[in-house]
Length: 184
View 1 (cartoon, helix red, strand yellow):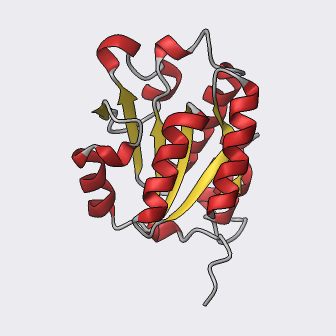
View 2 (cartoon, helix red, strand yellow):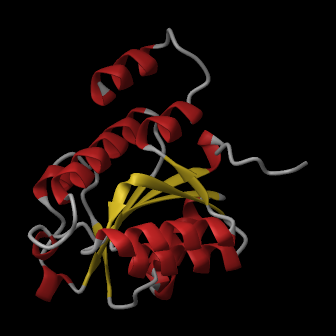
């Protein structure tokens, strides 16, 4: 059966890549991206979908911004030095342990760590989804080109609300009512 890009909730995992304090003043539309990632994290936790957070060289770039770290239930992150999250054994182990095949990515920078992670996950036969309104780079143009590159490689592109509602079966549930309060 052809994969048309609808993630399966029980086989999904959200990865929040490097949304750290040092990036705040330099990333294009950083506050909007952080707000959207916060919605994703809250919604995925309601849906009981695993969330993995990475931090690129946190000694130099700081910790994950509080708007995100404070809403994450287990609030532990994976420190990394590689651009691709897949370069860190801890990350790969967590993905495998989650049983996920549908990996949903958000964070910064789109053209560096998000792109490299997506490509490596594709090589490892995962279905990869990038939430386009929850990624950014220092330059808007870099994000634009990275998204085109992701599409060329077979990554499924989504928005925050689109990916959240794809993971739910229907309206009228307690989960739906909770998530509506998060996304609106």
